[in-house]
Amino acid sequence: MFDTLSERLSGTLANLRGKGRLSEADIDATAREIRIALLEADVALPVVRGFVARTKERAKGAEVSGALNPAQQVVKIVNEELVGVLGGETRRLRFSKEPPTVIMLAGLQGSGKTTLAGKLAFWLKSQGHAPLLVACDLQRPNAVNQLQIVGERAGVTTFAPEPGNGVGDPVDVARRGIEHARSTMFDMVIVDTAGRLGVDEELMRQASDIREAVQPDEVLFVVDAMIGQDAVATAEAFRDGVGFTGVVLTKLDGDARGGAALSVREVTGQPILFASDGEKLENFDVFHPDRMASRILG
Ligand code: GDP
Image (cartoon, rainbow, N blue to C red; front, side, top):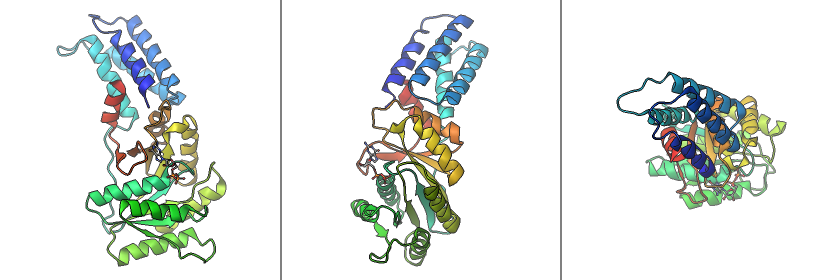
């Protein structure tokens, strides 16, 4: 991901190298190139507009400083703007003062939610926590089983409704899962919820009911970075229908153009907390806006 964007941006910025002073025309031309590069990468239009306007304004107003030549200054500005669009500071997970800390996962089917539940649990365990997975996706026949498999792989326990009792109520399972965590020794609960192939009202209502009932410390919206522009619309639908406190980007190892990843923070106003870039448990990390910006700028 980001290869083409990376290439375009570094190419554009390399063109400035060696110039003693940048004219307005140089800056305008660079801004145009940046705009094209971002649009080609599928970054949402309002995000592109803001990014280019800020970069241009700052580049024009930049004083020639002793340490950096004009081209380096523009690179620095673009880097800072990228960090800003990605969220600025690294946003850490919020822990409850009274354990267990409850993290609810929401997102479309196929976004990588179940895989993420395992990765997050595995990561929390490596940080010295005792996480419990709670299976509240009672919609898909195989979902509970899938979560249990993921849990086993991560070496963590999964709380699931007893089989044979019909479909069951996900709100009730969430409540009982948290109660179970509280009465035993789990300090973290990861609640997996049902997803659909597309956004629908029932899905939103169910996720929203679970949120209301258990008041999670974090609601993480899991989004597949490969779905391009659709990611933005999906994120907006979840923001309005369920509400979330953070975003997890999955499938950053894909060859999509990456615009979704660059848009979701600014469009939803919520920070990206984690990123997943592969199917293995270890392909997961805290999201650092500055590192991602450096990776994009090469
Ligand atoms: P869910 O329906 O949201 O629970 O999605 P799943 O966790 O079942 O994931 C859907 C598919 O995406 C599975 O085949 C996963 O192995 C795959 N997947 C999940 N995360 C990643 C990732 O970061 N990179 C890649 N390449 N595949 C992933």
